[in-house]
Image (tube, rainbow, N blue to C red; front, side, top):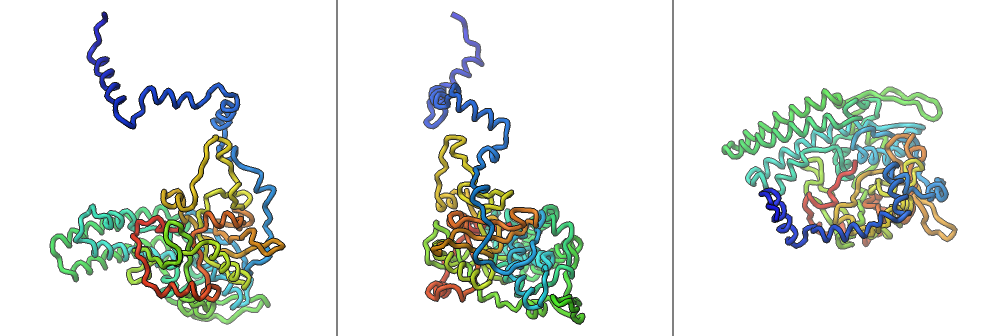
Length: 464
């Protein structure tokens, strides 16, 4: 009988040991699984050949976008112009400003206008830096491994955001026209500056924690924080330009008349041309993982130390849609956010549940509902756009909606996206609507004490 060498014996023993561990993949289990995949089936072989050599998304694209898409709408807000956020996560800023832009067009009697998103981006980043540093100071007595501390360092800063961040920025800093503070290379391509500021803030966070551990007094720590903010301001000003405190501006109206050159502050400009009280708006959300008809608040979901956390009333989408319909019919655009990447046919500018059929290609069912997709982090709000149109059939039933996007005029359908009402139910997450379109009994929930959620809640996801 042939002797077994040491390595062969060790291999056999280890294989036997692994085979005895419950849950491991044994040779017998693997053989059973392999037999379930019939490599001799002609249909399976054909599908495999196609998938190996082609883009999967092209293979599963259905005819629905080409057959069903109708980009006409019975009701549409009077909007003009398409913006482009370029390679940045500022969709929430563009969306908020795009919702306000029709007000400027009407109040100034002009055909075209665009706000400076770069201006708001500067102050958003500066305020977020301060919020992070204050968060580090407030948690300096906690372990570096504490979940909140870990979350702060992981999320030191970002260019994403949601409606309440937009509101706080406008109320504190106002707005300016785009030609007063144009885009820069860094504002249109935020990756590099984001990386640098994150690195600096994380370094600053460690310094502040060390100062606390060394028992420095509060004033000395705050003085150090101010030095750190000065460096962040310098990085931002060099990369984006320094925001104006005053500026001169005039325009040509629809009658081809040029106005007098006038001096404004960012706040006075907003008050004269936008004239919107942002406290008149309410954030409504459809999160089936939480109890409906409750008020919720997410900790640290803001960009200012003194700002307001994200608060929302949780409602079924069926109710939210009725308020949205009223707003559009009354010519009022809304802030809208969703999981835009799900079933998006970007060529046709169409969002529908049957755009892509992965199940037929692979013979595997994908069956999670909206609640399960949120719980497993498979789905969440990823992008903000302006909701501007709604269409109905002859019986008054909503069939589809229109979104004004911020990906440029060449994307989608001339810069717009059309979504079916069914897609709305599955992948819409939040809408900001004027309170005058919302039932009084729903608004009463704003008077309740909000249920506080941690910053690592699935719904914290910032729109980009």
